[in-house]
Amino acid sequence: MPVIDVQLKVRRRRGTNLVTATTEVLRERIFAAAPGALIGSLHALARSLEVGIVTLQQAARVLEHEGLLEVRRGPGGGYYGARPDDAALERAFDAYLRVHPATWEEALDMTSLLFNELAAAAAGCRDAGLLGDLRTMAGQVETCASDAELGAFEFAFQELLFRMVRRPLFEMLTRVTLHYATTRSDAPVRALEHDMDSWKAGRRRIIAAILAHDGALARFEADRSNRAVILRHLDAARV
Image (cartoon, rainbow, N blue to C red; front, side, top):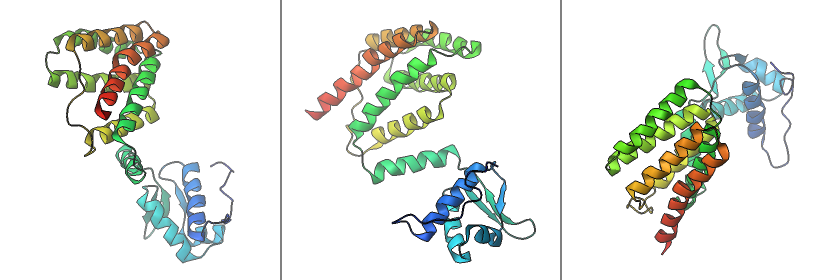
């Protein structure tokens, strides 16, 4: 376990109460240890942090709620570090968007920017299997003949790009903001206006640029055939 923070006592900053300060230090100890590692017993942690039992228990309840702490009782019991699953992290970010309301337009605008960068980053993929899957998808573009098939392709395409890029923050931001934008009660119910032939041509160009490992071109093609369409949609929705 890194030396940093492990031996620190709780020190309250101005405007921070004791429970909050204890929670912050305990959270750092958890992240400094491997998932599932014993952080300490109730009494040992209270002594090392120089806080009372009640204060430590209150901090522990906060971290349990965050999915970062597991309290085990009985022989071998104590406070064990944990990690929240991806679904819990996505719910937390979704909650943030709702507590600090973003408009559906802002969220949709953000997903289009993320898609530009996702396409550019995918051009750096050298995994032969994933590149083969992308070549297969290029052929599937032509088979799309309805909005339902287009939607299914877009979902599969995005999932493949996530696998090619392996950037968890990209993935979480995209998933949550897209879900937020499309489920807001004030968002227009109509789908994005699109021309099927133009959509197919745009996806072919994006895929070709990724397969050519040309990140700048992939970003350019994503911007003109995806983000530009969304921006036109947003402008029309404001009228």
